[in-house]
Every structure is written in structure tokens, then in C-alpha cells.
Length: 471
Ligand code: FAD
Image 1: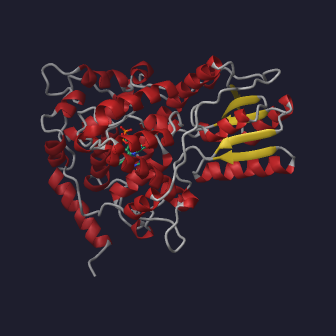
Image 2 (image 1 turned 180 degrees about the vertical axis):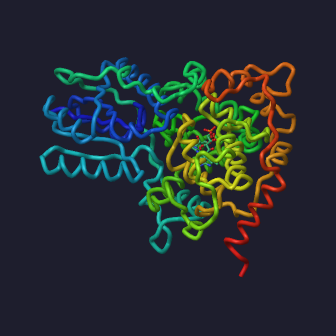
Image 3 (image 1 turned 90 degrees about the horizontal axis):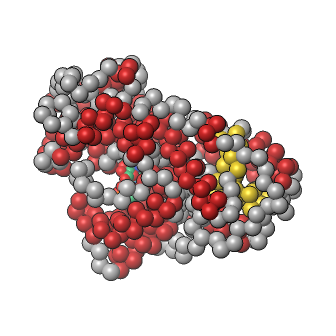
């Protein structure tokens, strides 16, 4: 009987262990993607990017003589109907690790098991399953460095090739048209502009990995902090949707280490930061929506979405060029350089004293590489409320950061049109991308910061010493 393979954030053929196992049985495989509650809840840009990813993946399956069946509705119900329609004997999928997916999947698994349908989940999104990395005392890791040392002792196993055979069912069940899902409906910004910056699909991901390994990895450690340079892998959008297997990237970087590439080990460490984020989210899911350290609960952050400082930050109008460049880059491209993420997040949580959750939610609405674990860990790390976090009293000065990491203002000029005689097209594009209701135009004044860098810093430090008086 056919196997339903329920694709989620694993939109790839190569090194997809569950899909590989399904194809290896020789039984007909019906690939399915469900628009369930999880998809419903996605932010605007991640949902839009998922739509592009689904289209690319469906085309890839068609090339192999298969198809991607799309259905909408609560996962269990949608799968029950499909099982009945095609007489499937199995429903398999790759695991998710966020609490909502874990609960949903457990419910699906137990219902099908009770009804004699073989329900199974597989690894594939991560290099190391979160429960397989344990401290000496049997707990989970809360600090990155020992986590890194622990995973270095583990074998990730070889990457699996794309399946050679993909048996088709005798008849295909009906499928929704992707266009009927309106995946870009919440994008209150110019979709054609944002689309130009996306590279959906497995083939694009593998090509980017090749380019990174051949041209960039050697200088990765040296250049990765400079937002104006194309020095990083740009792979996060692919890892987020599973268009690229982390194991393939891991093996390629290990090879680079073996041939003496200077930056390769640092790249491996970044891949392990992603693993660490998942390890934390799985073992302490409250990292997603509460201060990981409860002692931060009384800290006087503003949690008001209408706070004008917050609104200006979202719109790239703080008057601090490095912060505004970062926020504009994200709005136009769906991406933001890691250094810029740290600077803009620090500015929001410290100089503006706005709650990290508001910033995290805005990123979740705007990033096409949105990842629940990396986003939450990144925000709590910067805010100081997370495990292994940067100390709160270490307040990044965005001007000093710009001087260090954007010394010739190439990144700032790329995104800030005001005060430039001949602004770059990217800087002008921002004004075309944003909603009209924001009322912005490139000829408008560049505002001065609502809170000066010095007074913002002092205010944050004073609040910190009141909340956490020295003992
Ligand atoms: P590279 O430098 O080439 O790194 C390779 C891969 O390692 C990345 O693709 C990513 O999968 C992983 N990685 C690198 N840095 C980190 C990190 N600090 N934490 C976790 N994984 C990492 N990353 C996301 O993928 N999605 C998010 O929603 C996200 N939100 C963030 C929010 C904040 C406040 C901060 C400070 C960081 C956030 N990051 C997030 C991490 C990081 O900024 C991005 O992964 C990185 O910028 C992606 O670019 P790249 O693929 O070129 O990375």
C-alpha cells in the first residue's frame, strides 16, 4: 500500500532520511504538503517564502515524475482523508522540534498507530537530535562551548543520495492549487521587489553551497562580520525550510578543514549554533515566548506595540544609520546580516528599552530565513535574558560598531538614501517596497534619534542596576 510522505520543513530530495527510506521500500510514495494551523500562524515574509519553496519543490518532484499534493486543514483530519482516499498504509515525516509541532505530531502518530497505520518520524532537520546530546549529569547544555565540544565527538553519518526510484501511486489524489493558498496575502509590501532577493529550492541551495565552499569559506572567519561584504554562506533561508541538508553542508565544510581552509572550522561552529538553538528550544521551549531567565520578568521593558520608538525602529526611521540600514535591508530583502541583527536588536532592547519579544515578533514577520529557534535564541542572547547570553551591561554602540564593521559606510549607503546626492538603487528600493501608509519618501528628512545614544545607554544601565542591584 502507498506511503504518504508528509513534507514540512524538509523540502528536499537529497539527504532526506525519511523520504529516502520511503522510496527505498519500493512502495508507491505520495508526497504531501499541508496548509495547517502551523502554516496559518506564520509571519508574512516566512509564509511568502514558504510559498516560493513549495512551488520550487513541487516542480522538482514533477521532474522526477512525481507530484506534491497540497491540502488545507488541521493536519490529522487532512491526513485521515488522504489515507482513506488512497488506501495508504503508512504516514511518514521528518521531525519538527518546536513545542507546537511536537504536540501535533504526537497526536497524529498516536491516532494512526491506534488505527493500524504505520506512522513514523525521522531525523533530517538537524545534525544532532536534541535528546542525544547530554551533559555528564544527563541534562541538556545551557552554554555553547561545552555543547560544541560534545557534538564534535559525535558522528553525523554519511549524507544520503537522492533516491533513485520513486514509485508512483496508481492514481493521484486531488490537490489544491498553490495559488489558492495566497501565501503572499499578508505581505503589505511590494512582493515583486522582495521576490528578486529570494532563491528558492534545493538546486539553488546546493549551488550556493558550492559557491561558498569554492570562493568564500577560506576568508569566512576574517570577513563574516562585515555586512557590506558577501562573505557568509547566505544559506539560512534554505536551512530554515530544509531545502539543504545540514549534513551535506557539514561534510563539505569538514572537507574544507581537511584541505586547510582557514575559515572552515568557524563555519562548522556556526552550523553548531543552529543546532544549539534547537537543543535549547527542545529542552527549554519557554525560550520561545518567556524570559529564559525568570529573574528578568520584572525588568521594565516597554511591551507596547504602539510605542513610537518601536514603530520607528520597525520602519528603519530611528535616526541611527547602522540600525536603520539593518531594518531597511530586512524589509526589502527578507534578510539581515548577522552583525546587523545583533546591533539592531541591542539598540531596541537597550537604548530603546523595548521588550525583546516585540523585536522577535517583528523579525518573525519580516525574515525569509525565519527560524523559531535561532530567532528566539538570538533575541534572548542579545537582550541578556537567555542562556549563555551577552551581559546586559555590554551595550553595543551602533556608531562604534559601524566604524568597526562598516568603516567606509558601504552598508549604510546601500540602504539609506537620505543625505546622499546619488543614492544607490537599493536605498531607493526601500521606499518602493514599504507600504504607502508609512508615508515615506526618499526626499524626506533623515530624523535625529528620539533618544541619544548616550542617554539611552545610561537609562538602560540605570534600569539594569535597579533591577539587579549589586550584592
Ligand atoms: P552564515 O554565517 O553563513 O552561517 C551558516 C549557517 O549557520 C546559517 O545559515 C545558520 O543556519 C547558522 N547560523 C549562523 N549564525 C547563527 C546564529 N547566531 N544562531 C543560529 N544559527 C546560526 N538565523 C536564522 O536562520 N533565522 C532567524 O530567524 C534568525 N534570527 C536571528 C535574530 C537575531 C536577533 C540574531 C542576533 C540572529 C538571528 N539568526 C537567525 C542567526 C544569524 O543571524 C543568521 O543565521 C545568519 O545571519 C544567516 O546568514 P548566513 O546563512 O549567511 O549565515
